[in-house]
Image 1: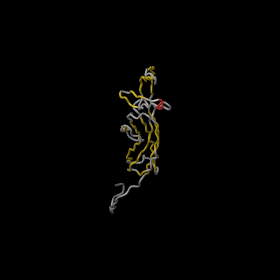
Image 2 (image 1 turned 120 degrees about the vertical axis):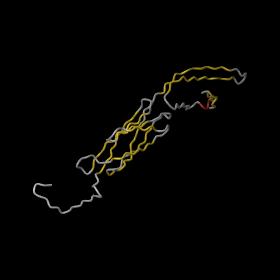
Image 3 (image 1 turned 135 degrees about the vertical axis):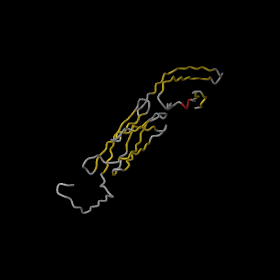
Image 4 (image 1 turned 180 degrees about the horizontal axis):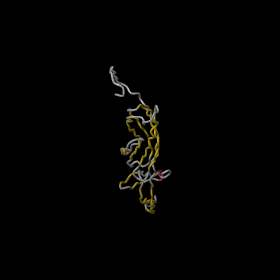
Length: 178
């Protein structure tokens, strides 16, 4: 077809089979279709128009998170994920709860469908275990009432203290003294 400007397209009969109109984001609009016929012999024209009200609804994003590699305490975990959303004009935000501290919210550039964020775990959870697992909860929001959530986890291993210096010196003390 030929774009005539102002949202008007001129289509030939061969353009009609399989014609698809793609709307980049949710919208409500009127679609007017006008059919015109021209008599080949005398050039007389006839036309007919019809209007159709179209409502395009938001589709929520769908997200996939990659596994988070285990780290030692004081290390940095890397969270990566991807998502799909047919709303190409949507501004997406990613909210991450790392299992400690306050949640973080990051706004992605329009069109982005991949994200990667990091978080430093200063210590494994104060337990007497060799490692602890932190749940990481993630929500992707499209700003148009659509969202998806997913979870993964980070295993943070305890690291034995190092660079310890202990000096002992002989001393004499009396009983019951320290």
